[in-house]
Length: 278
Image 1: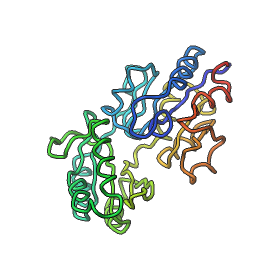
Image 2: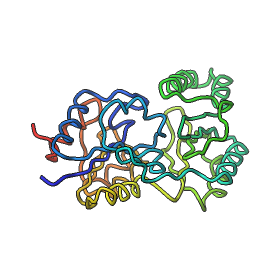
Image 3: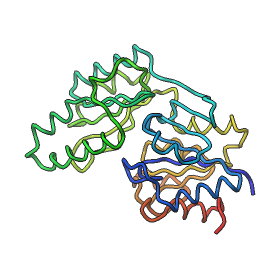
Image 4: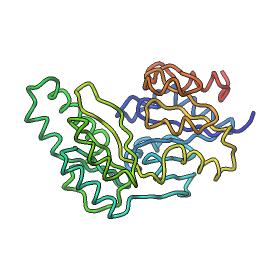
C-alpha cells in the first residue's frame, strides 16, 4: 500500500459546523489510517487558536488559516500573516462599507461587535433573533472575542458577513491586488458570508507545500471537504472527495461524494478508497 497524505477540512467535514467533537467513527478511521502509515492533516480555514480543542486528537500536522500557517509535526514550514498596511486597509474599507468582519490571529479571533448590535436592533425582523442566538453560541464554542480585545496582533485572514452583496463591491475592488474574496453565498438569514484570503496562499498551495516537505507525490494525496473554501485543496489533491452535505457548486468538481458528517462519511470514504481495512 502506497503511503498517502490525507487532508481533512473541519467544519461540515470532520465535525458539524462550529463543533469541536468529531464522531467516534471518524476518530477511529483516522487512528487506523495512521497505523497503516498514512499521514493525516487538518486542513482548515480556522486559525490556530480555534484548532486547540481538536489537537487533543492525534494528527500528523495542520494547515490553518486556509493555508497561511502550516505545521508538519512540530515544525512550522509556512507562516504568512498580512502586512500592517494590508490589514489596516482591509479593516478600514470594510468598516466604511458597513461590512461586519472578524479578524483571525494566531492567538484568537476578534469580531466586530456591530454585527450583534445590528441583529439586536432588527431582532423582530425575520429570523434575526435566531441568528443572534446562533452567533453568540458560535463565539462561545470557538472562543471568538470582541474587537475591543484585539491589540494589533498579526492577522492571517478576515471573515466577513455583509447585509448586502453591494456593500462588498468597493472592498473587493480596493483589495483585489493582494486578496481574493471567497464568497460562500447567502445564509438562510440573508447575509452574504465569505472570507478575505491573501493571494500568497490557499489550501491548494498548502497541499503542495506539505507534499513537497514530506516528499510525497501529489497523486498520493487525498482531500475531503464540503464548501467552496475547499475548492483549491480539492482541485490539487490526487483524490478529491466532497461530503453529501457539501456545496452543490463543489460536487461536480470532485472525484467522489461520501455520506454526510452525521452519517459517518469520513469512515465510509476511508474504507471505500482503501485507506483503512474493514
